[in-house]
Image (tube, rainbow over the protein chains, first blue to last red):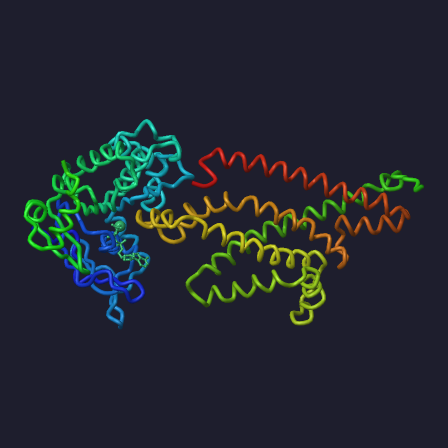
Length: 257
Length: 224
Ligand SMILES: Nc1ncnc2c1ncn2[C@@H]1O[C@H](COP(=O)(O)OP(=O)(O)OP(=O)(O)O)[C@@H](O)[C@H]1O
Ligand SMILES: [Mg+2]
């Protein structure tokens, strides 16, 4: 067994003195699919955003492929150079709730942009790769449209193709279906499921508990500023041991039928 | 009843055309320089490093809050005293209006840049772009589309403000008009023609700008 793809050691984050979480330890191995659940405000997005340093952790370490990112300052916190961050982010792809496609570029150019600018791949080659990623999410025929012409579900699938094009080792999804009409949720979940079946490594923040149950290899439940309960989907979702997890699941299943 | 007579003006129209040419040269120089200076000032002003943002902020404020004529005199009569350089009217005018319009453009650039949603910055960062890549490829192209109307407005303002250079004997349109008015004793006709030249050329530029803006709107979108 090689070293884990991603390791978080003692990660802590606060905003202006208000602590979101402390002491988060997490090990992600190749092929792991970790669903992060928790009440609103429990720090799910913040945790995900610390993994690729969109938010700078206050303390703790992030290690990718066994190598710690950043260098220690005297204060004990880590400092990250732009170079390190760019390398880290190429290995860790991210998909946002709000898609965040580039509105001034066609769909194909959205996907090819990182290949051209970050990886330095020639235009025609980058386009070929972009189109094949679009094929994977079922949108090759939209290659030359502008994002404004797409439905929410299609936008999110383009955003996934854009992340995939960079060949990341891990994908981070932050509530990828929360901004969608219920009717469009399915098409995005299918794409994520297909990625799961291909054995992709991912961290997924979601409120779709049923989906988390079926696709995750592990559940992480955040509460009280840390990992409150973790285990297999069966452990955590069918037989939660601790009161806040039980409460959370009960709230989510209130209108179950 | 005043007896209009444009003939003396028209027979010397070569003078006015030469002046207009110089006005255009100065405007184009100051515009090109001003956009470059403006972008640099805006980026410096937005920098997290105070060593950059503070001086940029000072330059912007000084040039926005002092009269352009004072700036022009300072560069033309003042600067040669501390730097032993030979100051030509054109050099003084180009310097003044490059930095002055740069200060205004900087504020337009800055407003445009900060108006781009946080999600765009983050989407560029998470695919591994450096700060300069994300500025060049993602933020500025969108910001420029949004800034375009204010940029146009400011450029037209610049073209009109360049008439001040007549005071340091740069042979622009107004300077030549003054000469012609004295020569022909026909100030009413001369300044009417000059006003018309400005009116027609600026209307024409505005028309082109509106067309261009329409094109922007169609390719992709102005906003989200
Ligand atoms: N940039 C920020 N500045 C200040 N406080 C923040 C910032 N981002 C998040 N927070 C705070 O940190 C806490 C955790 O926020 P976070 O967005 O991570 O929660 P979440 O679990 O993703 O919630 P949700 O389910 O609503 O998305 C919240 O109290 C939030 O107000
Ligand atoms: Mg969130």
